Each structure stands twice: as structure tokens, then as C-alpha cells.
Image (cartoon, rainbow, N blue to C red):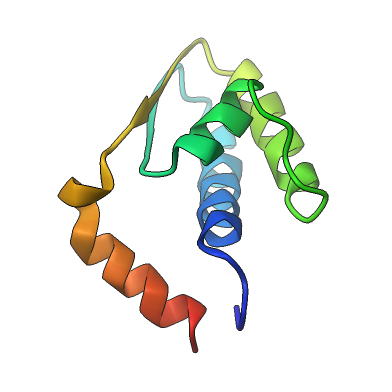
Length: 92
């Protein structure tokens, strides 16, 4: 991953997970992310940067194909361990 931003990594992980789930024909899905910006992009309320546009658009198409989807915010304070892991991975 090198010098990618945490937003890029979070969007990439979301896209990969949604791609895998799309093959399982899920009808209920809850997506929890700690970045409000990523949530806004997934909901279509904020335009993505060109670097992540493809992954956001593809993720939205997968989300649109699932019957019941909840996209919710998980506050970073609750997710400190995951943030530390992401920081370590991003800085490799």
C-alpha cells in the first residue's frame, strides 16, 4: 500500500468486501465505517476524488443491488486499535 491515505485504504477494503459479498446474494447488510467522508461518498452525498472514484462507483452499484443496506458511522474513539493497525499498514 505504501503511501496511500487512510481514506483510500478504507474505500479499498469496503470495495473488496462488497465485491466478495455481491457473490453471496446478500439481502441485508450493515456497513460500519469510522470515516464520515467515506460514509458520505458511499451514500452519494460527497464526490469522491479521482483516485477512489472507480471503487466508490462500483461499491454504490453493489449497494444498490442489495435489498436492505444500512451505512453507519463508528466513532474513531471506539475504534482506536483498528486505526493503529491501519496506520502501521499504510506506513509500510
